[in-house]
Image 1 (cartoon, rainbow, N blue to C red):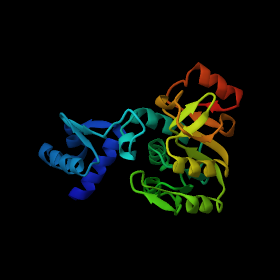
Image 2 (tube, one colour):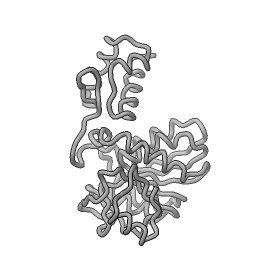
Image 3 (cartoon, one colour):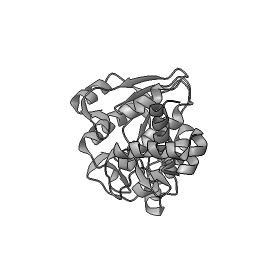
Length: 251
Protein backbone atom coordinates (compact mmCIF):
# COMPACT_ATOMS: atom_id res chain seq x y z
CA UNK A 1 0.00 0.00 0.00
CA UNK A 2 1.34 3.43 -0.92
CA UNK A 3 1.94 5.87 1.98
CA UNK A 4 -0.66 8.36 0.70
CA UNK A 5 -3.34 5.66 0.49
CA UNK A 6 -2.40 4.30 3.92
CA UNK A 7 -2.66 7.78 5.49
CA UNK A 8 -6.05 8.28 3.86
CA UNK A 9 -7.28 4.99 5.28
CA UNK A 10 -5.80 5.77 8.69
CA UNK A 11 -7.68 9.07 8.69
CA UNK A 12 -10.93 7.29 7.74
CA UNK A 13 -10.37 4.81 10.58
CA UNK A 14 -9.79 7.59 13.12
CA UNK A 15 -12.85 9.44 11.84
CA UNK A 16 -15.00 6.35 12.32
CA UNK A 17 -13.68 5.49 15.79
CA UNK A 18 -13.18 8.99 17.20
CA UNK A 19 -9.80 8.00 18.65
CA UNK A 20 -7.41 5.08 18.16
CA UNK A 21 -4.06 3.78 19.42
CA UNK A 22 -0.84 3.26 17.48
CA UNK A 23 -0.96 -0.45 18.37
CA UNK A 24 -4.42 -0.80 16.84
CA UNK A 25 -3.24 0.88 13.64
CA UNK A 26 -0.14 -1.30 13.52
CA UNK A 27 -2.35 -4.38 13.66
CA UNK A 28 -4.90 -3.09 11.15
CA UNK A 29 -2.40 -1.96 8.52
CA UNK A 30 0.31 -4.55 9.17
CA UNK A 31 2.88 -1.76 9.43
CA UNK A 32 5.60 -0.93 11.93
CA UNK A 33 4.92 1.44 14.81
CA UNK A 34 7.54 3.79 13.36
CA UNK A 35 5.70 3.93 10.03
CA UNK A 36 2.36 4.59 11.74
CA UNK A 37 3.86 7.37 13.86
CA UNK A 38 5.27 9.03 10.73
CA UNK A 39 1.84 8.85 9.13
CA UNK A 40 0.23 10.35 12.23
CA UNK A 41 2.81 13.15 12.24
CA UNK A 42 1.92 14.04 8.64
CA UNK A 43 -1.81 13.93 9.35
CA UNK A 44 -1.29 16.07 12.44
CA UNK A 45 0.75 18.68 10.54
CA UNK A 46 -2.05 18.80 7.95
CA UNK A 47 -4.50 19.60 10.74
CA UNK A 48 -6.60 16.49 10.17
CA UNK A 49 -5.97 14.78 13.51
CA UNK A 50 -4.78 15.52 17.01
CA UNK A 51 -1.98 13.35 18.36
CA UNK A 52 -2.40 12.02 21.88
CA UNK A 53 -0.24 9.78 24.03
CA UNK A 54 -0.03 6.42 22.30
CA UNK A 55 -2.39 7.29 19.47
CA UNK A 56 -4.52 9.93 17.82
CA UNK A 57 -8.01 11.41 17.73
CA UNK A 58 -9.96 13.96 15.76
CA UNK A 59 -9.83 17.51 17.09
CA UNK A 60 -12.72 17.98 19.51
CA UNK A 61 -14.79 20.96 20.55
CA UNK A 62 -17.45 21.58 23.17
CA UNK A 63 -19.26 24.03 20.84
CA UNK A 64 -20.31 24.00 17.20
CA UNK A 65 -16.80 24.34 15.77
CA UNK A 66 -15.18 23.44 12.48
CA UNK A 67 -16.37 20.47 10.45
CA UNK A 68 -13.18 18.61 11.27
CA UNK A 69 -13.68 19.26 14.98
CA UNK A 70 -17.29 18.07 14.91
CA UNK A 71 -16.24 14.76 13.37
CA UNK A 72 -14.49 14.00 16.66
CA UNK A 73 -17.51 14.62 18.84
CA UNK A 74 -19.65 11.64 19.94
CA UNK A 75 -18.43 9.55 17.00
CA UNK A 76 -19.75 6.24 18.33
CA UNK A 77 -23.17 7.74 19.13
CA UNK A 78 -23.41 9.22 15.64
CA UNK A 79 -22.51 5.89 14.05
CA UNK A 80 -25.19 4.11 16.11
CA UNK A 81 -27.78 6.65 14.94
CA UNK A 82 -26.57 6.28 11.34
CA UNK A 83 -26.97 2.51 11.46
CA UNK A 84 -30.52 2.87 12.79
CA UNK A 85 -31.36 5.37 10.02
CA UNK A 86 -30.12 2.99 7.32
CA UNK A 87 -32.90 0.59 8.28
CA UNK A 88 -35.39 3.16 6.96
CA UNK A 89 -33.83 3.22 3.47
CA UNK A 90 -34.59 0.71 0.70
CA UNK A 91 -32.42 -0.11 -2.35
CA UNK A 92 -33.05 2.13 -5.35
CA UNK A 93 -34.51 5.06 -3.40
CA UNK A 94 -33.59 8.72 -3.85
CA UNK A 95 -32.09 10.61 -0.91
CA UNK A 96 -31.26 14.18 -0.05
CA UNK A 97 -28.31 14.23 2.34
CA UNK A 98 -27.16 17.56 3.75
CA UNK A 99 -23.82 18.58 5.24
CA UNK A 100 -22.88 17.44 8.73
CA UNK A 101 -20.72 15.07 10.69
CA UNK A 102 -23.74 12.85 11.42
CA UNK A 103 -24.79 12.70 7.77
CA UNK A 104 -21.25 11.90 6.64
CA UNK A 105 -21.20 8.94 9.01
CA UNK A 106 -24.64 7.99 7.69
CA UNK A 107 -23.22 8.05 4.14
CA UNK A 108 -20.46 5.68 5.20
CA UNK A 109 -23.02 3.26 6.60
CA UNK A 110 -25.38 3.64 3.61
CA UNK A 111 -22.72 2.60 1.08
CA UNK A 112 -23.99 -0.98 1.33
CA UNK A 113 -27.51 -0.05 0.12
CA UNK A 114 -27.70 -0.74 -3.61
CA UNK A 115 -28.84 1.56 -6.38
CA UNK A 116 -29.39 4.76 -4.44
CA UNK A 117 -29.68 8.18 -6.06
CA UNK A 118 -28.10 10.75 -3.75
CA UNK A 119 -28.42 14.53 -4.01
CA UNK A 120 -26.14 16.41 -1.64
CA UNK A 121 -24.40 19.72 -1.06
CA UNK A 122 -21.57 17.98 0.81
CA UNK A 123 -18.41 17.21 -1.16
CA UNK A 124 -17.48 14.66 1.51
CA UNK A 125 -20.82 12.87 1.31
CA UNK A 126 -20.51 12.86 -2.48
CA UNK A 127 -17.02 11.37 -2.22
CA UNK A 128 -18.11 8.62 0.14
CA UNK A 129 -21.28 7.67 -1.71
CA UNK A 130 -19.66 7.76 -5.15
CA UNK A 131 -17.05 5.24 -3.99
CA UNK A 132 -19.80 2.65 -3.61
CA UNK A 133 -19.64 -0.09 -6.23
CA UNK A 134 -23.30 -1.11 -6.12
CA UNK A 135 -24.87 1.27 -8.62
CA UNK A 136 -25.28 4.40 -6.51
CA UNK A 137 -25.52 7.66 -8.47
CA UNK A 138 -24.51 10.97 -6.87
CA UNK A 139 -25.50 14.53 -7.77
CA UNK A 140 -23.42 17.26 -6.10
CA UNK A 141 -25.18 20.63 -5.97
CA UNK A 142 -23.29 23.66 -7.22
CA UNK A 143 -23.02 26.98 -5.45
CA UNK A 144 -20.66 28.92 -3.24
CA UNK A 145 -18.08 26.53 -1.78
CA UNK A 146 -17.25 26.52 1.93
CA UNK A 147 -13.84 24.87 2.31
CA UNK A 148 -14.18 24.31 6.09
CA UNK A 149 -17.39 22.29 5.86
CA UNK A 150 -16.62 21.12 2.31
CA UNK A 151 -20.08 22.10 1.15
CA UNK A 152 -21.89 24.19 -1.40
CA UNK A 153 -24.66 26.57 -0.44
CA UNK A 154 -26.39 29.79 -1.41
CA UNK A 155 -29.09 30.62 -3.99
CA UNK A 156 -27.50 28.52 -6.75
CA UNK A 157 -27.55 25.33 -4.66
CA UNK A 158 -31.13 25.98 -3.54
CA UNK A 159 -32.22 26.65 -7.14
CA UNK A 160 -30.71 23.37 -8.31
CA UNK A 161 -32.63 21.50 -5.62
CA UNK A 162 -35.85 22.43 -7.42
CA UNK A 163 -34.89 19.90 -10.12
CA UNK A 164 -35.11 16.99 -7.67
CA UNK A 165 -37.64 15.07 -5.60
CA UNK A 166 -36.66 12.41 -3.05
CA UNK A 167 -38.25 9.65 -1.02
CA UNK A 168 -36.10 10.65 1.95
CA UNK A 169 -34.22 13.66 3.28
CA UNK A 170 -31.54 12.61 5.77
CA UNK A 171 -30.58 15.72 7.69
CA UNK A 172 -28.11 16.78 10.34
CA UNK A 173 -28.95 19.28 13.05
CA UNK A 174 -27.12 21.53 15.46
CA UNK A 175 -29.94 21.56 18.00
CA UNK A 176 -33.46 20.26 18.61
CA UNK A 177 -35.91 21.64 21.13
CA UNK A 178 -39.49 20.79 22.10
CA UNK A 179 -40.70 24.34 21.33
CA UNK A 180 -38.19 25.87 18.90
CA UNK A 181 -37.92 22.79 16.66
CA UNK A 182 -34.88 21.71 14.65
CA UNK A 183 -32.10 24.30 14.30
CA UNK A 184 -28.68 25.01 12.84
CA UNK A 185 -25.74 27.19 13.86
CA UNK A 186 -25.20 28.32 10.24
CA UNK A 187 -27.70 30.38 8.23
CA UNK A 188 -26.46 29.14 4.85
CA UNK A 189 -26.62 25.49 5.88
CA UNK A 190 -30.09 25.98 7.35
CA UNK A 191 -31.36 27.45 4.06
CA UNK A 192 -30.17 24.46 2.01
CA UNK A 193 -31.54 22.00 4.56
CA UNK A 194 -34.94 23.74 4.54
CA UNK A 195 -35.04 23.39 0.75
CA UNK A 196 -34.34 19.65 1.05
CA UNK A 197 -36.98 19.35 3.76
CA UNK A 198 -39.60 20.79 1.42
CA UNK A 199 -38.92 18.39 -1.47
CA UNK A 200 -38.85 15.03 0.31
CA UNK A 201 -41.67 12.61 1.13
CA UNK A 202 -40.07 11.41 4.34
CA UNK A 203 -37.77 13.49 6.56
CA UNK A 204 -35.23 11.89 8.89
CA UNK A 205 -33.21 14.02 11.30
CA UNK A 206 -30.08 12.59 12.92
CA UNK A 207 -29.18 13.86 16.38
CA UNK A 208 -26.83 12.48 18.99
CA UNK A 209 -27.85 13.13 22.58
CA UNK A 210 -25.80 16.35 22.85
CA UNK A 211 -28.16 18.07 20.37
CA UNK A 212 -31.38 17.33 22.28
CA UNK A 213 -32.69 20.23 24.34
CA UNK A 214 -30.15 22.56 22.77
CA UNK A 215 -30.90 25.90 21.08
CA UNK A 216 -29.30 27.32 17.91
CA UNK A 217 -30.05 30.62 16.12
CA UNK A 218 -31.32 29.44 12.71
CA UNK A 219 -34.52 27.41 12.44
CA UNK A 220 -34.64 24.54 9.93
CA UNK A 221 -38.20 23.47 10.68
CA UNK A 222 -40.83 22.83 13.32
CA UNK A 223 -41.21 19.34 14.76
CA UNK A 224 -44.34 18.56 12.73
CA UNK A 225 -42.30 18.85 9.50
CA UNK A 226 -40.23 15.78 10.40
CA UNK A 227 -41.10 12.10 10.29
CA UNK A 228 -38.25 10.50 12.27
CA UNK A 229 -35.76 11.51 14.91
CA UNK A 230 -32.92 8.99 15.02
CA UNK A 231 -30.90 9.32 18.21
CA UNK A 232 -28.43 7.24 20.20
CA UNK A 233 -30.45 7.55 23.45
CA UNK A 234 -33.93 8.51 24.61
CA UNK A 235 -34.24 12.27 23.91
CA UNK A 236 -35.69 13.09 27.32
CA UNK A 237 -39.26 13.33 28.52
CA UNK A 238 -40.07 16.92 27.46
CA UNK A 239 -38.77 16.49 23.92
CA UNK A 240 -40.15 12.95 23.62
CA UNK A 241 -43.64 14.19 24.55
CA UNK A 242 -43.45 17.00 21.97
CA UNK A 243 -42.27 14.60 19.27
CA UNK A 244 -45.10 12.19 20.07
CA UNK A 245 -47.62 15.05 19.93
CA UNK A 246 -46.44 15.90 16.40
CA UNK A 247 -46.35 12.24 15.25
CA UNK A 248 -42.56 12.16 14.93
CA UNK A 249 -41.29 8.60 15.39
CA UNK A 250 -38.22 8.21 17.58
CA UNK A 251 -35.66 5.52 16.86
